[in-house]
Image 1 (tube, rainbow, N blue to C red):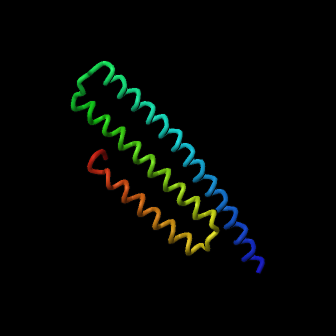
Image 2 (tube, rainbow, N blue to C red):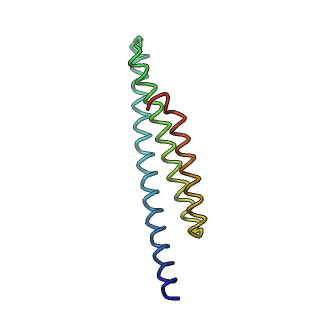
Amino acid sequence: MQYEATMTDTMTQTCQILSEIFGHIQSVQEEIAKLNLEAMEQINDFIFTKDLEVDDATFVALQHQDILRQQLGAVGELAQTLQKHLDAKSDPEVLESKFAAALEIARAKKEAYRGNAF
């Protein structure tokens, strides 16, 4: 009985720490995404203000910047989903299943852009 209580306490503490980690990842992702967006807007403003022609390499770089934005968003969504599942305090089997499903969604989002940038 004491072993089960200790395991439950350990699992609760582990879930709490993981939830905080996912929250931190999401916070960092949001800050990076904001900086990325601001940089893209400044570059676009510069190009249009100066009425510059964009060569192929610059066009590809801008596309990659957009893909970075989308992938950062996907990472943030994954962290948010995992944090939500942890906070729901599901039993380990349910938690594992939900984590696996969230990981598959994240992998699919990555693959959706693989041909374009990776």
